[in-house]
Image (cartoon, rainbow, N blue to C red):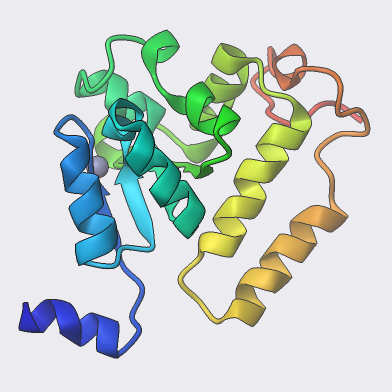
Length: 176
Ligand SMILES: [Zn+2]
């Protein structure tokens, strides 16, 4: 308990991996008892609608790890992953590799997978990137600079075409 209060007192932001395969309750504990600003995985959040809303309204960031969740059987398939539901519920999300050395993937791979599987629009990819910039554990000015750089460089001229159309060649961004 004392250690827990210590990081809160110093205002050190933390991320906790929770709800990967276990109960939603673990997420509640991580966010509300330990004060995690970000939750790694958070898959179990879909099983508790009330908690999902509380976590969303608090602005907690969910670090989505699609490939890792498949590999650990946290979800039976990408179609059953709550990624899309979280998007619809306006949960703040980022895309992540979890453990790139073990999963042997890059962040680009993960974005390609998400774009293909969920037919993401460029604005959705953009949102994931801006969320990531704002979720960096750094001075607010650093986050703002990162987010601004992304806003100034839109991924695509057209926001109405699913990005998966442009990634067949293994390139996430559409050809200009
Ligand atoms: Zn993990």
